[in-house]
Length: 172
Image (cartoon, rainbow, N blue to C red):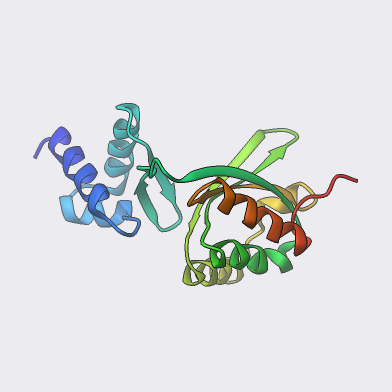
């Protein structure tokens, strides 16, 4: 199988997938190294397709034209992370990513793709199991989330709920 044929199969599988697909799973399926798959995905991106890497694997972003994408600026500490994410997904939003403005590196972004309560639980468990520090630790708790919602009024509803919960950044 050529690299081009393999990339076509990767794209086809990503289009049909309901969940993220890992580079390791692709590598095993195609009998190549994980690094070859990482290179394949880079070439797929260079060809113009939006493939996002999440902690769970690759996702092909084919945004529903009727959905709305917006950003919220939040401020809280690690202890409120689960409440923040649960509130967003509980209201039907998807937490696409988190980003912070680092004084040295500029914008740092982490892909999240948190869609369900189960995703929130798994994320919190990974933080705990790895004793991981979140990006918000670099900026006094201030961070941005890109949310994908059904429409703009739905986004506004989530933003208002975050404000009521005290999780939205309030200028001092």
